[in-house]
Amino acid sequence: MKKFLPIMFLILSASVFSQIVKPTPDKEQSKLEAFSARSGTVIERQFIDIGEVRGVKVQVYKVTDLVSKTNISGVRFEYTVRSQYSSDDKVAVLDSDEVDGLIKTIDMLKATVFPSTRDSYTEVEYRSRSGFEAGGYYSDKKWTAFLKLEKYDSKSMVIMRTEDLDALVAILQLGKEKMGK
Image (cartoon, rainbow, N blue to C red; front, side):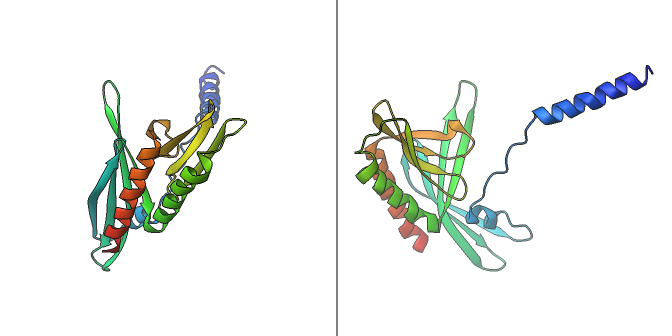
């Protein structure tokens, strides 16, 4: 009986602990990230700087499979979050076919959403395949624009001003030109 109790305690503890700890959801991937992560290939990655807004570095990201001679491109966002003792890079990738959707979202936010008012807290957002978000929220009788690079990480949120959004659209237009080459 004395040998049985410790074993029973371990089994019960493991059962309770496994119910408390929830696994982190898998990160959603863009087509570009999936292409880049393929195994059994020789991959070349190019990072072409196209601008920066509010500390968010924006690049054209080109990935080429040197064996099959196929390539794919998109836009990469990188933001460094600094704390007292460390820093952490937050990264998001938009597939080339998602860039126009982001530009249209920003234009719509500026033209119709931000000039309006709401009776309660409201969020309007664009979400990419990889979980990148851009949008705005209405709180305290005003709209605030944001970019959120990683879906499950509140530290990856960057607050934007209207002029920042204008600069971002200009950078994205430049990125579209560079992806076409």
